Image 1 (tube, rainbow, N blue to C red):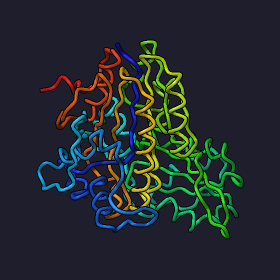
Image 2: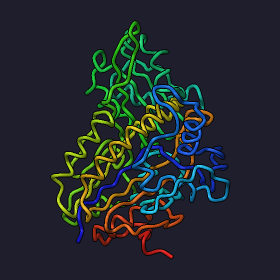
Image 3: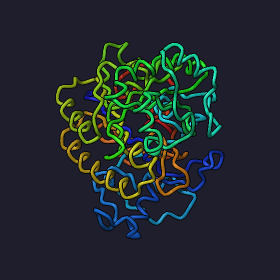
Image 4: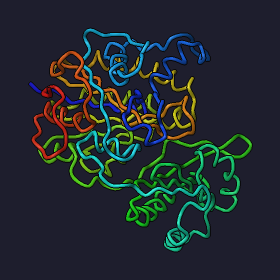
Length: 406
């Protein structure tokens, strides 16, 4: 008997061990493992103390998954869970960004190269920016560079408020980010600007244009709000989400899911709030979801708030808060429900730079459908194929059921 599918992505909670990490300059990156080691060493005893406390994720097998992901090296943080059903997923797509990871998890690997802006200054083509400003009537832009999302507000926040020129910036991802003040510039005006920009940048194979609204002033400080919105290229073919709703089911998106999939295959969406509130909204939603339907959730703050800012303490605290939420979820779900907790890439806060890191990801499963034990190394697309098999969806996606391999 099929219950409810619950699929959670811990954005950026990688577990190291990617076989091609060296090709991305990420050899040695291990988001989860390095946080665990930092906690054990007492290096992050600020607002917390001692070993990382995540009993629920431990019982689900995250330490076992970390051991499997790094089976070629000495791993001294193994803590076995006899009741766990887990695997380790390896990405085959060429990117290490959020849409690429999610699409491949949902059965559609990316087999092309995204457009990246390599120049640290004057990053975007002048002719493309001119098309955007002409179409929107904007008199100029600020930034046009690689930058941290918080640092660029310090640099250009005052000038933006004075001139109302939007702040354009990018990173090592295939992304155009546009920051504007919600009150002085206007939130809807920012969204409209991003829609126009997406029409220019998407044909160049730029994966996302992201609206980055902020508030505040120079005296108290500028800060980003939860009204972020991603304008993403649509997946090149139907994912498990589209196949699900084409079969008359419902896919409920939590967090960035609707944006990540360009609203393809998403029936309802809850977003625009912090991760703690999103998790509570998800718990409230579960009670009303029908058997055979899917809840697909992304919790982004591991990535956006702690990973990119290289905040090891914050990341550790976020994992511990999340683990308590997982405890509530485990008490709520029914035996016939099927839970998958995974990730889309890494963002090791102990690693160099401030960008995503190429890593394997954990696949932690719970429910009667989940066969106990170590299911070894699988591919991202196998995760979606397993959820599709559980939900009884016959569809043309990549991947094989994790429980029917070998």
